[in-house]
Image 1 (cartoon, one colour):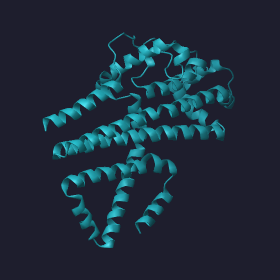
Image 2 (cartoon, rainbow, N blue to C red):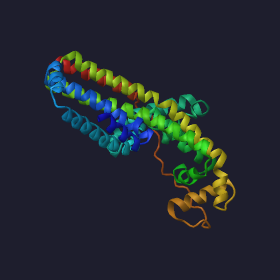
Image 3 (cartoon, helix red, strand yellow):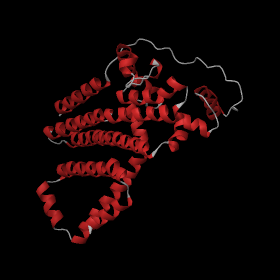
Image 4 (tube, one colour):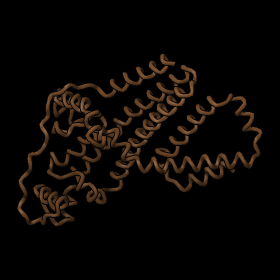
Length: 317
């Protein structure tokens, strides 16, 4: 019966939700439940107690786990964009900006060292647009490309351009975006498991070897899958560039306009509701000045904190 429940559930959900949300959630809950149960009782005793239960109770318990996992996965799937933005380095508030500032300055230095030709796929042209993570800079470079080349605001233009793209290009975009989100979601689940399982074992006095295994191995998986998201992010960014290069004039034709010089007027119209016939407003030069400040790799800093905190917990115990 449990198999039937899972089959019916998967029939209602699309493949992207299953791979990016439900499957990682089920694995994370299963591993976390195993760690918690292993610290509360002997595994052999727990297995004997489970085998002694009535079949109906087992089915109800299994169904309950699947239902809870689906609900959690639905919440996680709805927050996929927010999670991706966190991995890009777009943390909310002034505190988030301050915490990530060393990473931002490191990538600004790296962008200057590479130069535009070598770093065009990985960094935006304007140093003020540089973000504190590699994933954020790859996506920001693609986002700033239309404005740098044609004067089109990608955020305003993309929802209007996307419906005009051919099916083959939209399929490539969807595939690259799905792969990017899959890697990010696996990384987020692994990071959550590292904190949750590591915190539980530290509080309940679990074996040090188990604590370090859960804490460090899950953190390593989170880092590896984040790095794995960079390739599909580059592919997604390349597809976005292709979309603007080949099909921006089709959007202009649909709007009854001609020439890339019209993008500035369209940006005004879409952003501020200023009529198209109105003279262009002068560009404001209110971007913050880029200062040379101390920089550090966020990956190196994260690994230093992870290794140090794990050894500290073991030493304090």
